[in-house]
Image: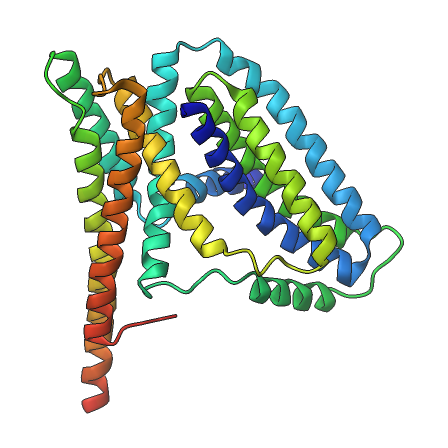
Length: 246
Length: 79
């Protein structure tokens, strides 16, 4: 059960980051050609593999309680940030994430950047930055999820599945994946990250959960109830004051 | 040096984000949990309840800012 939830959480969180990277790479490829964009992607992936190779093995040597305390706390801070944004978006206090609008903005910027050459450094840099930064976020998700469970391979499996699905979807669509319900996905990911963060940080601090690992389901249910309760309360307050942004 | 500060900024934005008080509150909650658990007391409700309170306060602050801005705009419009 725990392992299935781990793979699902890693898959969803990685998929959201990969959709964002795909939007940037597609914008670069469509406007300035695929050659330099491809080199940018390949170089970023090589840099990410090197970073994972350096920091991954170091985690295996740390005691599990320390890992869970530190990683659980970081994951909880990180997850609450996602959840907070998702709650604000759902209640109309923050604009929705729009891949189509991001794609249009990227294209405008890339076209304004001047003529392309055979070796288009601008295209290379934009593609590299997009994939490297979003990839670092995926690496963070794999390391935190996998590290706290002492099973980086399982978290990497979820991320690899997300990579395959997003790449296939991108190749078929050849356009930003605006049909992916990204805001709903981010809400789900925020709930999962926060729940795992609560569970692991408390366990790392020495807590014995009633029902052991099965209590993770209770934590997830609690976070869902709190989140939807906050959305309902905020929506009512937004409607009463006529505040909606999006 | 500039690259290093940009790199640090990226991780700060990525992990801590818009509301640094959440990060501070989570560290305090986990520290309290550690003390209570190591004293042999029941500590499992502290993190979930603490997180619910922190999240509620954080989104309420955003709501208050929007309400304040709407009031100021309304007052500006009537002058």
